[in-house]
Amino acid sequence: MSFYRFFFYLLPFCAFCIGYICIDRITKPQPVRVPQILGMSVKEALMTLSQSGMGARIVGYRTLQTHEADIVLEQFPSSGSHVKTQQTVLLVVSTPPPAPQAPALFGLSLAQIREYTKPCAEGTCERPPMIQTFFIHTNGNPDHVWAQYPSPGNRAPYGVIAYCSLAKPQLRVMPDVRGMTIAQLRSWCETHHATYEAIPAYAEDDDSIIEQRPEPGTIVDWAKGVTVHVGIHTPYNARVFSHRHTV
Image (spheres, rainbow, N blue to C red):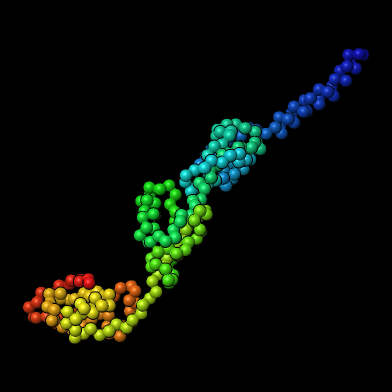
């Protein structure tokens, strides 16, 4: 009797153990393989891990000299490892270098700015400072920087805007130089800080001007420099060619 009594006491315990083992095997998650996510963006890596039933957590950052950010550089566990579902993969992602500081451009000429940005144009600098120039009519020195944004020393992630002085326009009416001789035109150009281009140039000082550009009465900006193109009455056998004479 004692044997049967012991057997009936042991039977529920054995049934419980067998049921627990069966349920555990049925519901136990199968190991999954960690995918390769190195070189992906964080968004792409999260989508890939989510499709594999895993999560992710960023545990570190590393600065790169490139402009790319949020690129997966390291992962743990490594790709190819077998882990449980819902496993968290630890990531180390990239961050771009800090934004450059705005240089002091006040008072520099356009030629100096070109020299400043020349190494970046040739690809020999790591992070080119982008400088955009705008011209405004001021009383400052023409073609020189009189203001900038951001101010020197502040961070300029999107580059620097340099405001350059533009000489005030000197609008004048183009006079009529037809009928003048070459000598008279040369004297007029020296007085009014202009240049002339004669076609043909194989002429004497006493040869007369028969046509001109800009035409008489045209409004021209003397601040930008004026070149008078004139046609000259020369002897029939004169050699015709273009020549530019600056005074």
